[in-house]
Image (cartoon, rainbow, N blue to C red; front, top):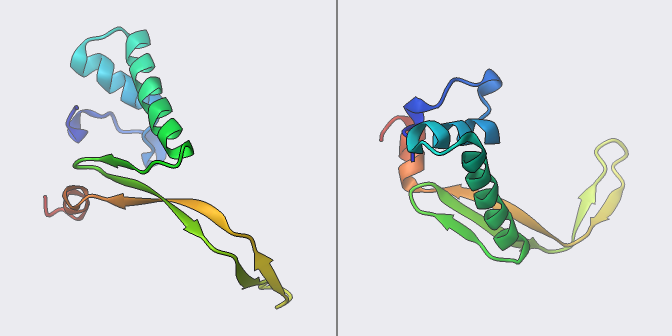
Length: 107
C-alpha cells in the first residue's frame, strides 16, 4: 500500500473512495476503472463480513468489532423522563498499536 505521504491533501481532512482509487492507480499502475473496482470490492467484502456478524482485523491498521449491547434505561435530557433503550448491535473500531503510535507521532 502507498505511504500516507503519497495521498493528496483532501478538503476537511477526509479521505474518500476516489482518493484511495487514485492511490491504487498511481502506485500500482492499473487503469482508473480497475483501481476503483479494487477499492469497491475490498469495501464490499469488509461490509459483507461485518453484516454476517464477523469481526474484521487488518494487521497494522486495526479491528472492526461487533458488540451486542443489552437493553437499558436512558433518560430524555429535556424532560428527565426515563425511556427504555432497545438492545442493539454496534460497530466499534480499535486501532492497532502500530496505528496508535503513528497517530501520536511515536511511530
